[in-house]
Image 1 (cartoon, rainbow, N blue to C red):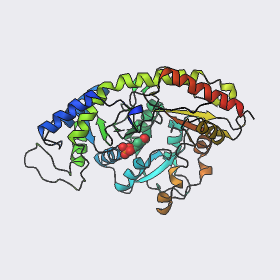
Image 2 (cartoon, rainbow, N blue to C red; image 1 turned 45 degrees about the vertical axis):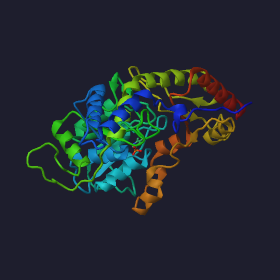
Image 3 (cartoon, rainbow, N blue to C red; image 1 turned 45 degrees about the horizontal axis):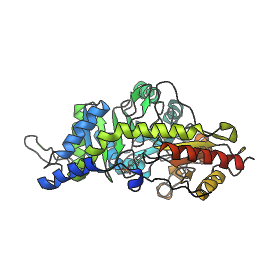
Image 4 (cartoon, protein in one colour; image 1 turned 60 degrees about the vertical axis):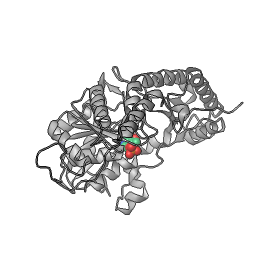
Length: 395
Ligand SMILES: *Cc1c(COP(=O)(O)O)cnc(C)c1O
C-alpha cells in the first residue's frame, strides 16, 4: 500500500492563509504602524473576536501561555495560593501559574476524555494529593477543554460558584466548541485562547483573553501593557507587569483567519465524522460520544485504544499508522505535568497511582492531528486504514 500524504498544520497544506490575510497585512505595512498602540488592527481584531464569542471584552496578547498568566494576574489571586488545574495540558498553561507566584494543585481527569470533571475538581479542592506543590488554600480553578471536545463546563462553573472561586477557562484547543449549545469560554469569569501555528486559527504565535467584566478587562489590558494605562488621564506604570502585546502584523493575519473560522471548523467536523464512520468499535478503537447540545470542534481526534483487543495497545496501533504515513501521538503529552523534570525540580512529588484517570487515560489514548486541509475522501481512506490496521492487530 502506498503511504499517505497527510496535510499538516505546519505548512500551507493544512492551513487556510491567503488573500484576506495578505490584504490586511498590506494595509499594516502601508500604514507604517506595526505596534498595537499605534495602529487599529489588533483593536479591530479584539472587537471582532469579542463579538464572535458573545463576550463584552477581549484583550489580545502574544501567546496562549501569556493569556493564562494575564488572566491569573488580573484576578489578583493571593501570592502563594493554590490553583486547581489539570496535569494533562500544555506546559505553558502551567508555568503561567508559577510566574504569578501561584502553585498548581493537580486534579484527576475522566479517563475517557482526559478532561477534568466537577467530581475530580471537587476532590482536589477538598484535599491536595500526597506530594502536591499546591498545599495552600485554593484561590481559583482552571478548566481546560482538550482536543476541541467540550468539558462539563456548566457543572464545573456551578461547583466554583458554590465554593466562591473564580473559574478560568483555557479554551486554547476549543474554539467553536459548544457545551449544551453554549460556547466553551463563556462559562467562567475569564477565558483564554491561543493562536499558535497549530491551533484552529493562527498568526504564528498569539493569544487572547475574554471576559464580561469591565474592571477585570482593564486589569488584563494593563498587565499586557507593562501596566501603562494608555488613554487614561495621568498615566503611570501602576504595578509590575511585562510586555505581552500582539503586533499589528499578527492582528492583521488574525482578522483574516477569524472571518474563516466557522467554515474551517465545519469542515473539520464533517471530515472527522467521515473518518470516524469507518471505524467499527468492535476492533477495540472508540471515540467517546457527546451529550445533546455539545459540539466537538476537532482540533485533534483523540481515540481510546483497548489494549486487550488491540495488540500493543495505543503504541502498537501508532506504529502501524506511522508505517502508513499517518501521523499520530500515542499517550498524547506522554506524562502528566507533575512527572516533568521542571516540576520535579520544583518539588512536585505526586504519585501517578493517586491519579487513576490520568493513568488509564494516557495509557489508552491515541491522538491524531486534524486540520482543514484534510478532505472527505482522504478522511474516509484514513478511517478505513485505521480500521484495517486495528483489525490486523486483533489480540
Ligand atoms: C496551546 C495551548 C496553550 C499555550 O498556548 P501558546 O500559544 O502555545 O503559548 C495553553 N493551553 C492549552 C490547552 C493549549 O493547547
